[in-house]
Length: 121
Image 1 (spheres, rainbow, N blue to C red):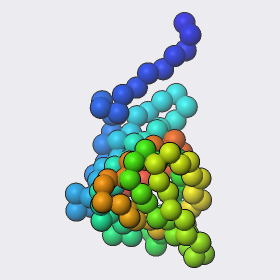
Image 2: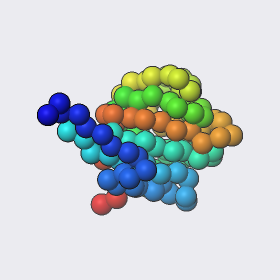
Image 3: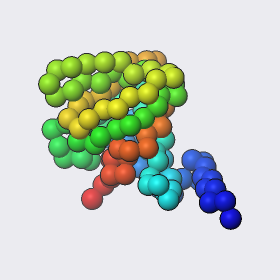
Image 4: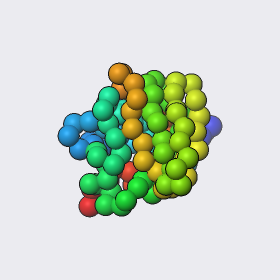
């Protein structure tokens, strides 16, 4: 056996919805850990649509991801800001807010930070 593993986000192991219908997180569990595909709708902002779920002042997840479509702006707790868009990789340490700056949904694949992201108690 080659050890190949194959998953499909259309048959995610878990789906988590953001507040106010502003997007969703689809998770697949792999032998290397969970991988998430998040869709953030235009107007989504972490501090409005995930903070009530997380219960923290800023996002405390560490993200390692790739942007498929749309645009997101990230502001670190220390004030540093950057834009994240299609075809770009980003590593985002804990302690940030983020919001969608595009008129289209922002789709991000993350293989580090979505295990507990937007997970309701």
